[in-house]
Image (cartoon, rainbow, N blue to C red):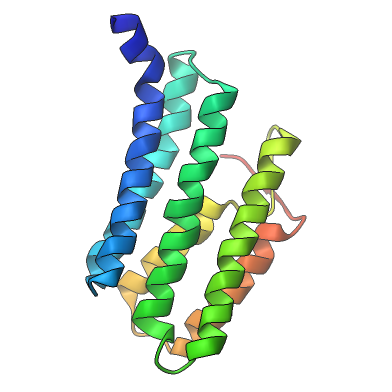
Amino acid sequence: MAGLVIKRFANFITFLNLIFGSAAIIYTINEKYDAAGVLILLAVLMDSLDGKIARRLQTSSDFGKELDSLCDMVSFGVAPAVLIYAQILIEPYTYIGLAAALLFIACGAFRLARFNILNLNGYFLGLPITLAGGFLAVFALLGGFSPLVFLLLLVALSIFMVSTINIPKI
């Protein structure tokens, strides 16, 4: 039993990523934008821990990698895009803001799929979705920027996620 718990511990951390990201969406729906931003950042923390724990416990698996990507799509693709759209873009840029949010989600999905098939070591190809989503959460928490800045930020991060820029793994 203890062996099974150890084997699945990293997956539990990955599920916490998903839970925080899903809760961020619910908090956004309820107009609790600061809480949603904090929950996305907690998901970033869980995402940074799950792989390290899996490697340390020698429990890395293809299942864990796929699960991580699915959870990342919710926490760092959908949750931050919905947060930025609902909090900042819905009023001044209804349809253009929606298009930018959907572009961010689509580019995030593309980026995760590409990541899963390339198996690159030492660097990321394009901006990782975790960084893009976390960056949006920080900007949402900071506030004080023009809605146009957020619109352009969504588009720029989308482009960087699908770019072929090499970003060193830390």
